[in-house]
Amino acid sequence: MKVLAIVLNTFKEAVRDKILYAILIFALFLIGGSVVLAALSIGQEAKIIQDLGLSCISLFGTLIAIFLGIGLVYKEIEKRTLYILISKPIYRGQFILGKYFGLSLVLLINLAVMGTGLFLLSRVYLGKWPWLQILALAFIYLELLVITGIAILFSSFTTPTLSAIFTLSIFFIGHLSPDLKLFAARFGRPSSRFFIDFLYYLLPNFRHFHWESSIVHGRPLDHAILIQSASYGLLYGASLLLSAILIFARRDLK
Amino acid sequence: MSYLTKMKMRCSLFFLLSLCLIGVWMVEWDLDRKPKFQPDEESSYWIPAEWFRPFLVGYELIGADFLWLQTIQYVGRHLLTDRKFPSLYPQLLRVVTLDPYFVDVYRLGGLFLAYTGNQVDEAVSLWKKGADLHPDRWEPPHDLGILYYLLKKDYPQALYWLEKANGLPGRPEYVSRFVARLLASTGQKETAIEMWIKIYDQTDVSWVKDIARRELAKLGVHLRREEGR
Image (tube, rainbow over all chains, first blue to last red; front, top):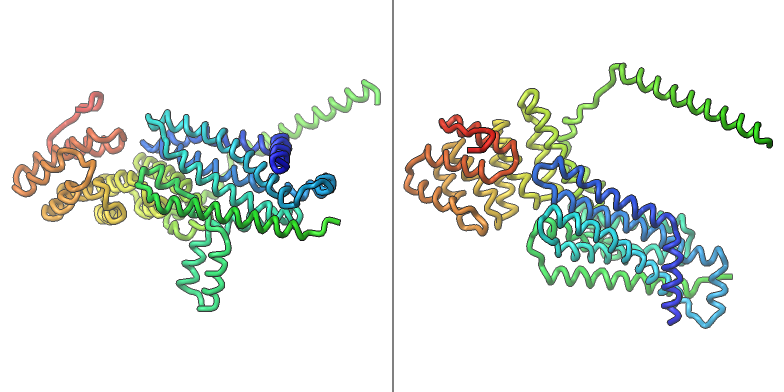
């Protein structure tokens, strides 16, 4: 119940943030604008609309997760509202959980708005309902949950600026980590290979959440890999959340 | 501050803004008339996609789409000018490196390479790449078989690829007929005409229709532009 109150409060606070609407409108504008690009593509309209739409949803969802997530905890400390909260019978862990799920709810609604726009547009160009697109959107949401976890983790012990830098860095590395591993396997010494392997398993691998290519091209999907990828996302997100709770519980707030 | 002073200040600001805008317009107009360095965009087509793929941070599909649009512009530009396509093959490779499942790139790209660009070996290489990557798709072996039949006149290879296409799901019904004719080694001109008519019928892309119409004319069949056949 206490967590739910924080979730709803975080949701209301985020909904009041103007940056959210700016990003959302821009994303919808770009998804709609993909029609213009698709017209130049010689018979590839549906593919380009879906590619561009799903990528926009992922990218702008990431921006929302980062820019709202980095300030979640810090703002409460700066405004001193956190002291009022923790003077009440609330665990710090509950506070972090409330903040996390509040932002996750905002992201879910954003994703639903952008996803519905793309879904209807794809229906027009494909001539049939693109049901598998929902799967691609679900994985994008999983990716956003992990990114929110990273943003909250950094937000629990550092400033918003540093949180933004760290989260963006991990976002880039997480997309490139398979290349990094391949590079180390080809050229690295055994010691550097070990170090890169360690980093590879420590940092998130966002490639597990990108099913757009298979879905847009109508390729067969391996259900076992889908389930494993979803489990990876949920476990990684839970690990980030637990780390954030542990760090925040030990943080000196005086 | 009085109302009059405020009005005076606003008018002055408006006057200054107008001057600035006129200045911007005059400089822009003058700059447009001067000769400028034009970067050779097409030389960048030789940069392998592997080199810039990391900068796309997971959004390779968008990269492939933009390169595909760039390829269409490239083909269109050269069709209207010199009808030479030296950078087409590397550019197509870049698209399929970023999006290997983009089957239409093999199909349309191979057609342009072979029948408009006269780069038959490059077309074979592109289609073989497509056939290797997509062993479950009938299109790359089908197109390869037709190319071997029509351009290379290598009938054993044509038979090999068309038989391959004939064993794959979703293939058009005429493939088995072509295979039968190849096995009987008869009616080569009729087979060629039928192949081009099928290519013509299958596509909505005007460029592909133009290629088919041109090749059919070489075989003595003339299609009427406005109503197809």
